[in-house]
Length: 230
Ligand SMILES: Nc1ncnc2c1ncn2[C@@H]1O[C@H](COP(=O)(O)OP(=O)(O)O)[C@@H](O)[C@H]1O
Ligand SMILES: Nc1ccn([C@@H]2O[C@H](COP(=O)(O)OP(=O)(O)O)[C@@H](O)[C@H]2O)c(=O)n1
Image 1 (cartoon, helix red, strand yellow):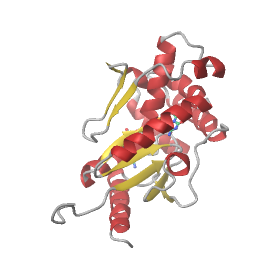
Image 2 (cartoon, helix red, strand yellow):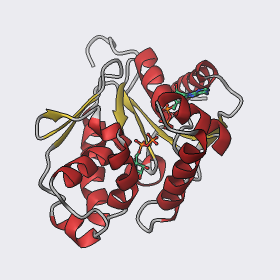
Image 3 (tube, protein in one colour):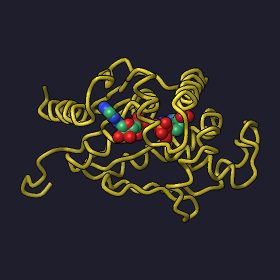
Protein backbone atom coordinates (compact mmCIF):
# COMPACT_ATOMS: atom_id res chain seq x y z
CA UNK A 1 0.00 0.00 0.00
CA UNK A 2 1.47 3.36 -1.03
CA UNK A 3 0.99 6.43 1.19
CA UNK A 4 -2.07 4.78 2.73
CA UNK A 5 -3.93 5.52 -0.52
CA UNK A 6 -6.22 2.52 -0.20
CA UNK A 7 -9.02 3.32 2.21
CA UNK A 8 -10.43 -0.16 2.71
CA UNK A 9 -8.97 -3.69 2.52
CA UNK A 10 -10.58 -6.13 0.04
CA UNK A 11 -13.86 -7.50 1.29
CA UNK A 12 -15.44 -10.82 0.32
CA UNK A 13 -19.24 -10.96 0.45
CA UNK A 14 -21.17 -14.21 -0.07
CA UNK A 15 -24.86 -13.97 -1.00
CA UNK A 16 -26.81 -17.23 -1.15
CA UNK A 17 -30.46 -18.20 -1.40
CA UNK A 18 -33.03 -19.86 -3.62
CA UNK A 19 -34.25 -18.62 -6.99
CA UNK A 20 -36.01 -15.26 -7.16
CA UNK A 21 -34.95 -13.98 -3.76
CA UNK A 22 -33.05 -11.10 -5.40
CA UNK A 23 -29.47 -12.40 -5.25
CA UNK A 24 -28.38 -11.16 -8.70
CA UNK A 25 -30.03 -7.74 -8.56
CA UNK A 26 -28.85 -7.12 -5.01
CA UNK A 27 -25.30 -8.40 -5.57
CA UNK A 28 -24.76 -6.34 -8.73
CA UNK A 29 -26.04 -3.15 -7.10
CA UNK A 30 -24.07 -3.63 -3.88
CA UNK A 31 -20.87 -4.39 -5.80
CA UNK A 32 -21.35 -1.34 -8.06
CA UNK A 33 -22.06 0.94 -5.11
CA UNK A 34 -19.03 -0.25 -3.13
CA UNK A 35 -16.57 -0.56 -6.04
CA UNK A 36 -16.32 -4.36 -5.75
CA UNK A 37 -16.25 -7.09 -8.40
CA UNK A 38 -19.30 -9.30 -8.91
CA UNK A 39 -19.60 -13.03 -9.68
CA UNK A 40 -22.82 -14.81 -10.70
CA UNK A 41 -22.00 -18.46 -9.97
CA UNK A 42 -25.39 -19.63 -11.25
CA UNK A 43 -24.37 -18.32 -14.68
CA UNK A 44 -21.30 -20.59 -14.57
CA UNK A 45 -23.43 -23.68 -13.82
CA UNK A 46 -25.82 -22.59 -16.55
CA UNK A 47 -22.89 -22.12 -18.97
CA UNK A 48 -21.48 -25.62 -18.43
CA UNK A 49 -25.03 -27.01 -18.79
CA UNK A 50 -25.44 -25.08 -22.06
CA UNK A 51 -22.23 -26.65 -23.37
CA UNK A 52 -23.44 -30.15 -22.38
CA UNK A 53 -26.77 -29.63 -24.17
CA UNK A 54 -25.03 -28.20 -27.24
CA UNK A 55 -22.66 -31.15 -27.41
CA UNK A 56 -25.32 -33.84 -27.11
CA UNK A 57 -24.32 -34.97 -23.61
CA UNK A 58 -27.03 -36.88 -21.72
CA UNK A 59 -27.40 -34.52 -18.74
CA UNK A 60 -29.36 -37.17 -16.80
CA UNK A 61 -26.27 -39.42 -16.79
CA UNK A 62 -23.78 -38.20 -14.12
CA UNK A 63 -20.92 -40.35 -15.46
CA UNK A 64 -21.34 -38.95 -18.98
CA UNK A 65 -21.38 -35.40 -17.55
CA UNK A 66 -18.34 -36.09 -15.33
CA UNK A 67 -16.33 -37.49 -18.25
CA UNK A 68 -16.41 -34.19 -20.20
CA UNK A 69 -16.40 -31.68 -17.36
CA UNK A 70 -12.92 -30.34 -18.17
CA UNK A 71 -13.64 -29.64 -21.86
CA UNK A 72 -15.42 -26.27 -21.99
CA UNK A 73 -13.53 -23.10 -21.10
CA UNK A 74 -15.80 -20.89 -19.02
CA UNK A 75 -14.87 -17.24 -18.48
CA UNK A 76 -16.78 -14.82 -16.25
CA UNK A 77 -16.40 -11.05 -16.53
CA UNK A 78 -16.81 -9.53 -13.06
CA UNK A 79 -17.66 -5.87 -13.72
CA UNK A 80 -21.03 -5.43 -11.91
CA UNK A 81 -22.20 -2.86 -14.47
CA UNK A 82 -21.60 -5.29 -17.36
CA UNK A 83 -21.11 -8.90 -16.21
CA UNK A 84 -20.25 -11.35 -19.00
CA UNK A 85 -20.09 -15.12 -19.45
CA UNK A 86 -18.46 -16.97 -22.34
CA UNK A 87 -17.94 -20.63 -23.22
CA UNK A 88 -14.97 -21.28 -25.51
CA UNK A 89 -15.07 -17.61 -26.42
CA UNK A 90 -18.79 -17.56 -27.28
CA UNK A 91 -21.07 -15.10 -25.45
CA UNK A 92 -23.75 -17.32 -23.87
CA UNK A 93 -25.42 -14.74 -21.63
CA UNK A 94 -28.74 -15.04 -23.50
CA UNK A 95 -29.05 -18.80 -24.23
CA UNK A 96 -28.14 -19.83 -20.67
CA UNK A 97 -31.43 -18.23 -19.48
CA UNK A 98 -33.56 -20.40 -21.78
CA UNK A 99 -35.97 -23.11 -20.66
CA UNK A 100 -33.81 -26.01 -21.87
CA UNK A 101 -30.83 -24.98 -19.70
CA UNK A 102 -33.03 -23.99 -16.74
CA UNK A 103 -34.70 -27.41 -16.69
CA UNK A 104 -31.34 -29.27 -16.80
CA UNK A 105 -29.02 -27.14 -14.68
CA UNK A 106 -29.89 -28.72 -11.30
CA UNK A 107 -28.97 -32.20 -12.55
CA UNK A 108 -25.67 -31.01 -14.04
CA UNK A 109 -24.74 -28.94 -10.99
CA UNK A 110 -25.37 -31.92 -8.68
CA UNK A 111 -22.50 -33.88 -10.28
CA UNK A 112 -19.51 -33.72 -7.86
CA UNK A 113 -16.94 -33.36 -10.66
CA UNK A 114 -18.84 -30.34 -12.02
CA UNK A 115 -18.93 -28.73 -8.58
CA UNK A 116 -15.21 -29.38 -8.00
CA UNK A 117 -14.27 -27.71 -11.29
CA UNK A 118 -16.58 -24.71 -10.93
CA UNK A 119 -15.72 -24.21 -7.24
CA UNK A 120 -12.02 -24.02 -8.10
CA UNK A 121 -12.77 -21.45 -10.79
CA UNK A 122 -14.84 -19.39 -8.33
CA UNK A 123 -12.11 -19.41 -5.69
CA UNK A 124 -9.49 -18.25 -8.18
CA UNK A 125 -11.72 -15.40 -9.37
CA UNK A 126 -12.39 -14.30 -5.79
CA UNK A 127 -8.70 -14.47 -4.90
CA UNK A 128 -7.82 -12.30 -7.92
CA UNK A 129 -10.29 -9.51 -7.11
CA UNK A 130 -8.36 -6.38 -6.26
CA UNK A 131 -10.86 -4.53 -4.07
CA UNK A 132 -13.01 -7.48 -3.08
CA UNK A 133 -16.01 -9.21 -4.59
CA UNK A 134 -19.67 -10.03 -4.11
CA UNK A 135 -20.22 -13.68 -5.03
CA UNK A 136 -23.78 -14.96 -5.31
CA UNK A 137 -25.02 -18.54 -5.52
CA UNK A 138 -26.24 -21.45 -3.41
CA UNK A 139 -23.15 -22.74 -1.56
CA UNK A 140 -20.84 -19.74 -1.42
CA UNK A 141 -21.01 -19.18 2.35
CA UNK A 142 -20.98 -22.90 3.18
CA UNK A 143 -18.45 -24.34 0.74
CA UNK A 144 -16.85 -22.03 -1.82
CA UNK A 145 -15.78 -19.16 0.47
CA UNK A 146 -16.34 -20.31 4.06
CA UNK A 147 -14.04 -17.51 5.29
CA UNK A 148 -16.02 -14.73 3.56
CA UNK A 149 -16.08 -11.46 5.54
CA UNK A 150 -19.85 -11.29 5.31
CA UNK A 151 -22.43 -13.96 4.48
CA UNK A 152 -26.01 -13.13 3.56
CA UNK A 153 -28.80 -15.65 3.02
CA UNK A 154 -31.75 -14.18 1.13
CA UNK A 155 -35.21 -15.74 1.40
CA UNK A 156 -38.71 -14.86 0.17
CA UNK A 157 -42.04 -16.68 0.02
CA UNK A 158 -42.53 -19.00 -2.97
CA UNK A 159 -45.42 -16.74 -4.09
CA UNK A 160 -43.23 -13.61 -4.12
CA UNK A 161 -40.39 -15.43 -5.89
CA UNK A 162 -42.69 -16.92 -8.54
CA UNK A 163 -44.32 -13.53 -9.15
CA UNK A 164 -40.87 -11.93 -9.61
CA UNK A 165 -39.69 -14.61 -12.05
CA UNK A 166 -43.06 -14.51 -13.83
CA UNK A 167 -42.54 -10.78 -14.40
CA UNK A 168 -39.35 -11.59 -16.33
CA UNK A 169 -40.55 -14.54 -18.42
CA UNK A 170 -42.79 -13.60 -21.29
CA UNK A 171 -45.46 -16.18 -22.10
CA UNK A 172 -45.04 -18.46 -19.06
CA UNK A 173 -48.00 -18.89 -16.70
CA UNK A 174 -47.60 -18.14 -12.99
CA UNK A 175 -48.54 -21.63 -11.77
CA UNK A 176 -45.97 -23.35 -14.05
CA UNK A 177 -43.30 -20.84 -13.05
CA UNK A 178 -44.01 -21.48 -9.34
CA UNK A 179 -43.95 -25.27 -9.77
CA UNK A 180 -40.67 -25.34 -11.73
CA UNK A 181 -39.03 -22.96 -9.26
CA UNK A 182 -40.03 -25.17 -6.30
CA UNK A 183 -38.83 -28.28 -8.14
CA UNK A 184 -35.42 -26.69 -8.75
CA UNK A 185 -35.15 -25.50 -5.11
CA UNK A 186 -35.90 -29.03 -3.90
CA UNK A 187 -33.28 -30.56 -6.21
CA UNK A 188 -30.69 -27.93 -5.21
CA UNK A 189 -31.42 -28.31 -1.46
CA UNK A 190 -31.39 -32.11 -1.34
CA UNK A 191 -28.35 -32.97 -3.50
CA UNK A 192 -25.47 -34.67 -1.69
CA UNK A 193 -22.62 -32.34 -2.72
CA UNK A 194 -22.79 -28.82 -1.26
CA UNK A 195 -26.55 -28.29 -1.35
CA UNK A 196 -28.30 -24.91 -1.16
CA UNK A 197 -28.03 -24.10 2.55
CA UNK A 198 -27.68 -21.19 4.95
CA UNK A 199 -24.25 -21.04 6.59
CA UNK A 200 -24.39 -21.00 10.37
CA UNK A 201 -22.83 -17.52 10.46
CA UNK A 202 -24.93 -16.02 7.63
CA UNK A 203 -27.33 -13.10 8.17
CA UNK A 204 -30.78 -14.09 6.91
CA UNK A 205 -32.79 -11.38 5.13
CA UNK A 206 -36.43 -12.15 4.23
CA UNK A 207 -37.10 -10.03 1.14
CA UNK A 208 -40.79 -10.93 0.72
CA UNK A 209 -42.04 -7.53 1.85
CA UNK A 210 -38.96 -5.44 1.05
CA UNK A 211 -38.33 -3.46 -2.12
CA UNK A 212 -35.15 -4.22 -4.02
CA UNK A 213 -33.82 -0.83 -2.91
CA UNK A 214 -34.42 -1.71 0.75
CA UNK A 215 -32.56 -5.02 0.36
CA UNK A 216 -29.63 -3.26 -1.33
CA UNK A 217 -29.45 -0.66 1.47
CA UNK A 218 -29.60 -3.39 4.11
CA UNK A 219 -26.67 -5.31 2.56
CA UNK A 220 -24.59 -2.15 1.94
CA UNK A 221 -25.07 -1.23 5.61
CA UNK A 222 -23.98 -4.72 6.72
CA UNK A 223 -20.83 -4.52 4.55
CA UNK A 224 -20.00 -1.04 5.87
CA UNK A 225 -20.49 -2.22 9.46
CA UNK A 226 -18.15 -5.14 8.82
CA UNK A 227 -15.54 -2.82 7.34
CA UNK A 228 -15.84 -0.53 10.34
CA UNK A 229 -15.20 -3.55 12.55
CA UNK A 230 -18.59 -3.43 14.29
N1 LIG B 1 -37.14 -7.16 -3.11
C1 LIG B 1 -37.64 -7.27 -4.35
N2 LIG B 1 -38.90 -6.85 -4.60
C2 LIG B 1 -39.43 -6.97 -5.84
N3 LIG B 1 -38.79 -7.49 -6.91
C3 LIG B 1 -37.53 -7.91 -6.71
C4 LIG B 1 -36.90 -7.82 -5.43
N4 LIG B 1 -35.64 -8.32 -5.55
C5 LIG B 1 -35.51 -8.72 -6.84
N5 LIG B 1 -36.64 -8.44 -7.53
C6 LIG B 1 -36.89 -8.77 -8.95
O1 LIG B 1 -37.11 -10.17 -9.01
C7 LIG B 1 -36.51 -10.73 -10.16
C8 LIG B 1 -35.54 -11.84 -9.75
O2 LIG B 1 -34.44 -11.23 -9.06
P1 LIG B 1 -32.98 -11.82 -9.13
O3 LIG B 1 -32.07 -10.80 -8.56
O4 LIG B 1 -32.69 -12.33 -10.51
O5 LIG B 1 -33.12 -13.08 -8.14
P2 LIG B 1 -32.18 -14.35 -7.94
O6 LIG B 1 -30.83 -13.97 -8.45
O7 LIG B 1 -32.20 -14.63 -6.48
O8 LIG B 1 -32.82 -15.45 -8.73
C9 LIG B 1 -35.85 -9.56 -10.91
O9 LIG B 1 -36.74 -9.15 -11.93
C10 LIG B 1 -35.70 -8.49 -9.84
O10 LIG B 1 -35.76 -7.19 -10.39
N1 LIG C 1 -23.48 -21.70 -6.30
C1 LIG C 1 -24.39 -22.26 -7.10
C2 LIG C 1 -25.13 -21.47 -8.00
C3 LIG C 1 -26.04 -22.08 -8.83
N2 LIG C 1 -26.18 -23.43 -8.78
C4 LIG C 1 -27.06 -24.15 -9.72
O1 LIG C 1 -27.33 -23.34 -10.85
C5 LIG C 1 -28.72 -23.17 -11.02
C6 LIG C 1 -28.99 -21.82 -11.64
O2 LIG C 1 -28.62 -20.81 -10.71
P1 LIG C 1 -29.11 -19.32 -10.90
O3 LIG C 1 -28.54 -18.54 -9.77
O4 LIG C 1 -28.83 -18.85 -12.28
O5 LIG C 1 -30.67 -19.50 -10.74
P2 LIG C 1 -31.79 -18.38 -10.69
O6 LIG C 1 -31.53 -17.58 -9.45
O7 LIG C 1 -31.66 -17.59 -11.95
O8 LIG C 1 -33.06 -19.14 -10.61
C7 LIG C 1 -29.33 -23.43 -9.65
O9 LIG C 1 -30.69 -23.85 -9.73
C8 LIG C 1 -28.41 -24.52 -9.12
O10 LIG C 1 -28.77 -25.79 -9.63
C9 LIG C 1 -25.48 -24.17 -7.87
O11 LIG C 1 -25.65 -25.39 -7.82
N3 LIG C 1 -24.59 -23.57 -7.04
